[in-house]
Amino acid sequence: MANAVDQTPALATRGRVLHWARLYDAVVWVFMLGRERTLRGRTLDLARLRPGESVLDVGCGTGTLALAAKARVGPSGTVCGIDAAAEMVTRATRKAEHAGLDVAFRHAVIETLPYPDGQFDVVLSTLMMHHLPRDVRSAAAREIRRVLKPGGRTLVMDFGAGGQNRGGLLAHVHRHGGVGLAEIGDLLRDAGLNPVESGPVGTRDLHFTLAQAPGGA
Image 1 (tube, rainbow, N blue to C red):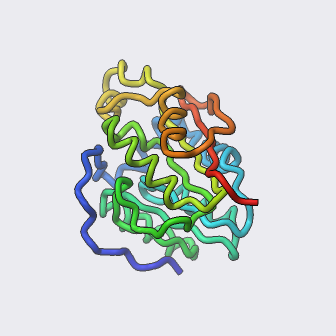
Image 2 (cartoon, helix red, strand yellow):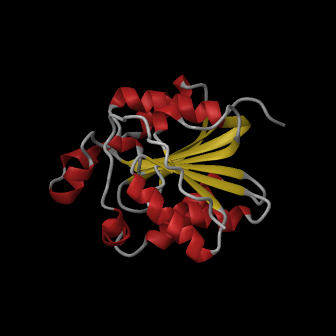
Image 3 (cartoon, rainbow, N blue to C red):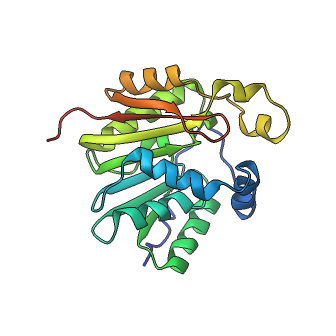
């Protein structure tokens, strides 16, 4: 069963923290025009998840992607998720318990991940980087690199840089603007990761970069 929520207070973050856990899934459904299940599958395909791998989802929200990742990696794999909002972590843990899936969610921030060096095969960062100021994005990329195993992979998916010019709810969510592919690539390379694939996701203005840590077989 899912691990109990870690109640240790998270360190402060300068990124945007979403506290509306009760509405989160509904907002995502509306924003993705009901295609969020398709997007989850596409995300896991792009990350090239395999059975038995260890996965970390940073900025996991209510845990839906992490639960789908657990179904992909199977009983021999492990999945963890972190979010800066305790409400999101609580809801994610309840979802995992209801689904009977062993996924460990923690209340923590991307700038100081509560995991040792080299723990994960894959780190997922989906629709999270745009919540961070630009200098914090660099710290986030370094932390992702730190917790990846040699040869491990990270998938960063986010809105294009043009998202910051829109109005309404999207403008509110994009407080720090979208994140262009060139910026994502630079962030990952500066952190010591090697981009291996990038491009449009095929949903709205989302794009992705898959990068790999040096080393491994």
